[in-house]
Length: 83
Image (cartoon, rainbow, N blue to C red; front, top):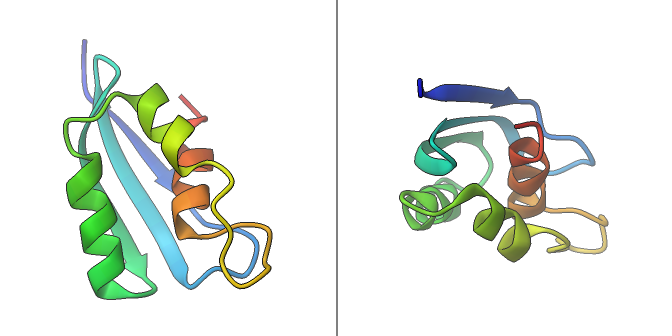
């Protein structure tokens, strides 16, 4: 199977501006977050590498940032649901 790329524009007033995620055979190969807290974005992306998509969705869904009802990790989960 080919690598699929998800390009997602986060919603809900989060700090990140763009997310790109590469997935092959249900496993996250690479992720990149543009904007937001650079260190946190890099950390989340590093942790996601090699993780199954459904596991990432389960772990990241519903995380809230300052009462926004969403967060950058929650938006990453929403992006992954597009597969």
